[in-house]
Each structure stands twice: as structure tokens, then as C-alpha cells.
Image (tube, rainbow, N blue to C red; front, side, top):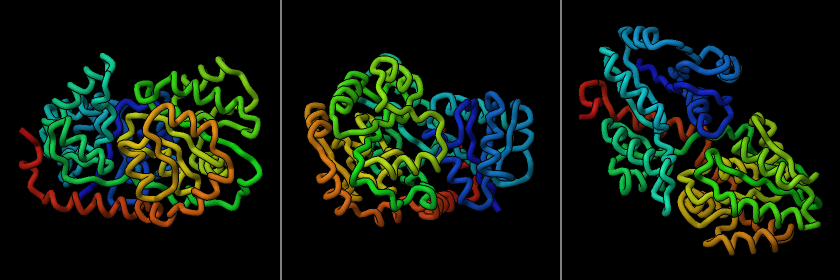
Length: 360
């Protein structure tokens, strides 16, 4: 029986942070799988152990990891397309004589938005070169698959949506009719959120008397910065919150706003929809894919349209959208077993011949 290793090197974020959550959920819901942390910071592995119990391995040096991989076993090693993870995989490939099958689960962090920052250009070039060194790539969405082909010039094995814990993220009986609260997602990295646009959205929300609360989710530093710039009792930061608390917030708010231009998938979008909370997002990439599939939200084509919608939408309009939401489709698409089974189907196609999986 093959063992599936989901490797996260050099992490310092808790298990419920967006970029790490797919691997945690894949391990949680799949058999013969283990989450592998390499040199985690600040003893953060204790938090992961609470989630995964005995399905966690921690290595603090490369020698011990190579020794483990050298055991007579069949290993499929999953890693993200974060540039440091790809560099580590390249190093591991060079140092490790044991043969394992590397599989990159691509979240496509850096794209071809125009204009791209110098940092994004450098990372895009680096990641493109690294991805082309490995044959086995799985995209995290249909649009992610498309971008990998068109811009990164690699052909993925397929796409698999990240699994959502639908036992936690589900519609609740909270009454959202009388209180107008909003969740504003700030993105996971600085590059994926336009700060000027976010400021405009916050200003509009704070001026509206009918809106009682605005919850900020995502980039920690950006949350604190925005609250310091516009101190208000309406603003509530959500920093390092658990899935249970986050699901409670989704169920309490009337609308989730995701103003990201570069979003190949959209964890926050899916979690919000599975909690029956409509999403306001741009009509492109992951948000377009997800909202179109579930009919649970509003898609806009410009910043002006985004601001106008934020300033005018009311609870009656949101109620009408909720009545059209196809939450069952969302729960079926992102049900953890559906994602795990699709991933296992792709893995089974790789067969048992290691030599063909190392790239050029």
C-alpha cells in the first residue's frame, strides 16, 4: 500500500490558515496519508497535532527526512507550488537516492496580472522554471488548470478542488434578516489585494448606518493597518481564528466581499457559500467559476461596479440571492470525500514505476 505524504516545509502559520488548509483536510479525510512538517517554526506542530493526532510527522533536519524516505515503501509526496516549497523539493530530489513520486498541488499564487510587481515577476519566472522540472502537477481549480497551461506552460494531470470540512461549514439557523453585517476578505498575501480599493470599500461600509459590523479576514498586518487608519466600533479583526469560529461568523454575516483580482480558487468564497452566505466578487478566475456554479453571489466587472454594489445592496436584495443559492451543489462539489476520491483517482493513474515521474 502506497503512503501519501503531504509535505509543508518552513511553515509558521496555524493549520486553519488558507494556503495550508488543503493539505490538512486531505490528510484528515484520506487513508494511508500523513502530513509532514519540515522545520516548522515556534513549535507550531502542536497545533497541527490537535487536528491530525497520529497522522503527523515532524522533521527538523534533512538527514532524518531522507532516512525516512529511504525506507522500503512506496511514497507519493505532495507539495505546494509555493516557491520555497518547490526549491526544497528540488533539493530533496537531488539529495535523496530513494525514489518517491513528487506531485505538486498548484494553487497558482502568482499570475500574469498587468501590471505585475517586480517581486511577482521574479517569483512567476522562478516558479515557472521549477514547475517545468516535474511531470506531476494537479491544479486546485478549472481556472487554475487553464492558467498553468497558458502562462506557466505546463500540462497538469487534472484539477481537484481543495476539500472543505462541510461538517463545520454549513448553513445555520442564525437570523440574518434583522442585522446587516459584512465579512471583508483581505487576501492571504499583499500582492492579491488592492489596498486602495479595500479602503474605498471600508469607507462606504462605515458610512452606511444600516451596517452594524464589518469583519476583516485574511492578511494580519493589513487588518491591523486598516483598523489603525479608520478606528471604528464596526470593524472587527479576525486573526488566527479556528474553523468553528469562522463558520459562526459566516453564518452571522449577510454578505462576504472578496475584492481580489488574482484568485485562482477562493477558499473564503466556498466556505461562505456552503454556509449559505452570498459573495460579492469580480467576474473573473476562481470567483467567477465558483459563483457561477452555485448561483450564490454577485459578480462585478469593474471597481466602480464593486463600489456601487457595496453602497446600494440591502438585506432584501441579499435575501433574494440566498433564495437562488444552490448550496447543495456547493456541498457536493467541495465535500471532502469528493475531493479526496478525485485526487486518489489521479494518483492511481501514475502507476508504480518511479522512474517515469522525475521529470527531465
